[in-house]
Length: 243
Image 1 (cartoon, one colour):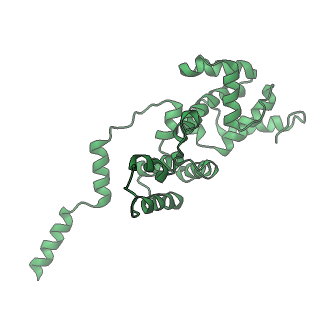
Image 2 (image 1 turned 45 degrees about the vertical axis):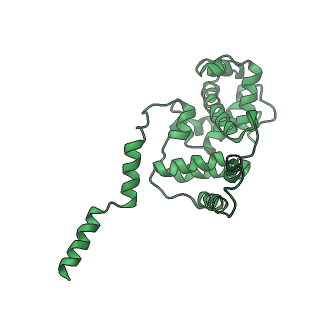
């Protein structure tokens, strides 16, 4: 009896845990993430620790707003890279996908066409494809935060747009001013773009307050204390709307 117990203990020691296997699998097959990546890549590759819950709440809000499965997979990637469990709303999605994949008759017919629908992707082509929408939002954020940096430096909106474009990749450098303004309106959810710096500043400051991880992803932005001081100065100016 004693020898049998010893044998079982030795077997348990030799058997790696599931978590260890997952770590080993990732370390063997996944290349190490680069230390420095561009802004749009940071949103996908940045691995927040203390702020992870807040970060995933922002991703959840995008999922609820758009019903775009792209954000589900952003949350899955973030959770795996932080070795954290999936949020409940991600588990609900995965359970629904599993139910459909394992349903009787799911593999019949043209399964390649069924799979995107099972995953929740709408059969759209062109710029309205869910994956392209997600990538465009990430790219717009990168440009918008460069624009925010220059706006907070006191530059006119036109100069801020041009300077932000010149610091960005070829897509933005070759874009006309109409395209730049459209990207900013989409990112900050504006119907019309303000024409003055003093109106733009509270808009970008409040966006940063609502998305604090932006300060980690874009270190060129002013810190929170500087933003609070700037907003306090603006609030004392009754001519600047803060809503």
